[in-house]
Length: 253
Ligand code: NAP
Image (cartoon, rainbow, N blue to C red; front, side):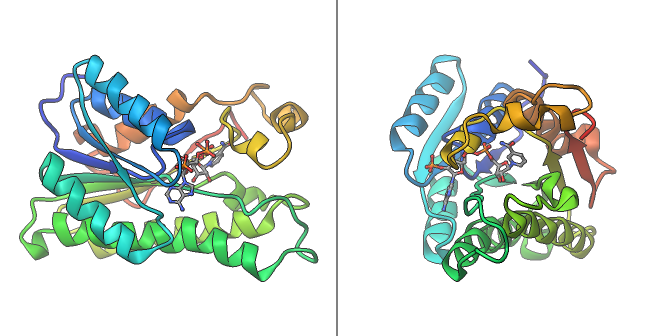
């Protein structure tokens, strides 16, 4: 365990499963009080909160659909009230919108994936900046956005609309990093390659990782914990001069 004393409250969106759950666990091990957000995964979120508590950490499950502004505003207020001043945000919640070539994709699917992956991330960052920026009386902090290697591969034939949301996240990361660089806040992104989570099966192809294995130079998918390690490094004082960076964790992909 890294020896960091009480780094403050971390809000992790989509903390009930996959990469978000691994971030929540590792952050608690690093001493963060974790506000673990979920949309529908109440049982999983509660279970993880109990696991963290049993290991001596501090966590609180907070429900919010990040595509809804009011729910985001309430989530930050609750997190602060339950766990104390917010010092970090990991924008992890994400959906793919499902497989569709561009000529087949529906407006509803595009709207949904941009609402969760882009608008949700920007509004969560807004709430975090309002609390952490020295411009608003805060004491600084760090934000990590979960992008994807899809922003660069483009995900042709699978979900170009999803890849486009991650391109937007990369631009947002660079822009916000520069906007708040003198206000005590660092903003970075982690771009995972193919990671072994339920995301692939949830989109109807449990064998997706197997199918795409030849495209991964290391010839294996990443584990959520391997993504979380990069996130925790970017949040930590060890990354004190890193802002606007997009850290690829993709086994070479
Ligand atoms: P996952 O296992 O499907 O988990 C998705 C998480 O997002 C769940 O905790 C889910 O919460 C939450 N979520 C979904 N919609 C939400 C909403 N409207 N409001 C709040 N939370 C919501 O996915 P994952 O693979 O861990 O992916 C996490 C992030 O990594 C995403 O941003 C994804 O795009 C990115 N990523 C994943 C991969 C990969 O290969 N897995 C690769 C690159 C990037 P509920 O359980 O409550 O629904």
